[in-house]
Picture 1: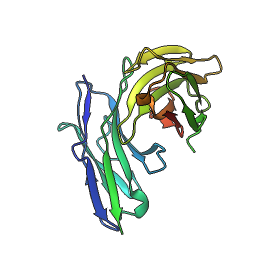
Picture 2: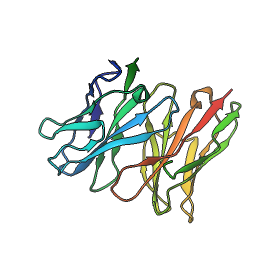
Picture 3: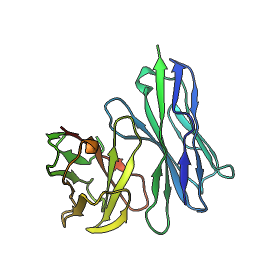
Length: 115
Length: 111
């Protein structure tokens, strides 16, 4: 069975600094996608970034980038130049791309950006 | 704006009552998912529909049921409500084998 683990329940970072959120997963699938979602205080779930497992290049979206280590089953999110608006809960998610539905969320990391 | 709409935004009701939450997916998305998020908790997957048919079931209570209609909107029915059912209920939709897009959620309060 697939699992997604976020081992950091809470983190904080100073404004303008860089922070890395960790995510590990376990699967026997070879084809899958990984995602990071952000949930700000408004509680809206917002897709931050996605990574296809078959792509070796790490995904980047502006200040957000991932470090995808397929062999280690690790998928960390790096936020550069942190802004107050980055304060949110961040969820890592796994989706298999074959067979029946399997979309699994981690338990989340609460990130607070300090002024 | 994700393109997924949910109504109502807020719902306050009493224990033992029944409510219906509604979701309209993004245009063209055939899959609809329902999640429950209790206060400061993660997302609990409830159920998925694809083009009107149930595709997968998660931790959905027997008191809860859902359906997806021919126009692809979906409804989640919660009955015999208990205090512990108070939560944020999300609907999400997706194209095949792709990321989910979430609606704004319905906040249910059971008094």
